[in-house]
Image: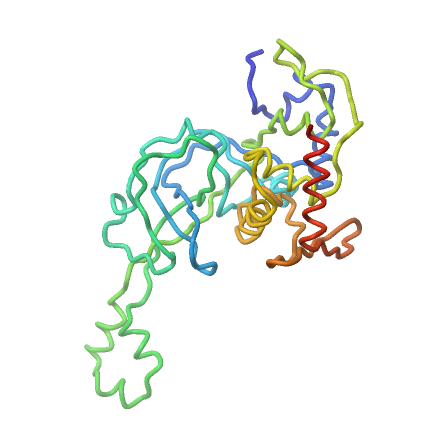
Length: 299
């Protein structure tokens, strides 16, 4: 079998000692998120926005590859055989094609739904967050909105032809549109499965090993999030790690808090759901201590 990272669900027995039932049970328990293979057009790269209420859009692109699903999306697709997603993480940027400016596809569309629309010269080399699909919506123009709020006297002043022109005059706006994922598109990430089930990677072999090792598996959610950030930047300080988790909390396509455990987060404390949905609070000082523990365990 060819050595890969992403496999169909039915291939689980070929590359690990885990059964398909074990795999789906972990998904149902929220312990494992799945991925999906897509052949999609007109996705949009998301960049950091200065306005929390309005996301920022960069280039449009096409993609034939694997993208990530959240824990909830994985469960919904497993139970309902399909799910719609609006944001995601592009896991194989090497398969991004037709990287282009938004104006190439939609030269006349207004960008009022986005905080900014930017054109980047080069596509990302690492996994990045994207909108599942970018399209347009026709909306009533400003004059129609004004007339809708106006009284009867203003309508009579416009006359029939004026009202008709206002109603027919529409604007075209850029919009985020959902992408449907079907059950047969689901994939599992072998690296993630190995971590969740405590499997050691077999050397010089495409198969996952058959040794299950549960010793040393981290279960504290905040520590797991800290480890995720440190995996990308081992030298990050406490405030940088905190801000990375905070920014992830403010987005829909979460890469750090993949199970959406954090309910609120500010500059001083994190409120999150523990076992049996018990509300926990981690203050910044405690957070610093957790970082020290994670660093110690990694050495």
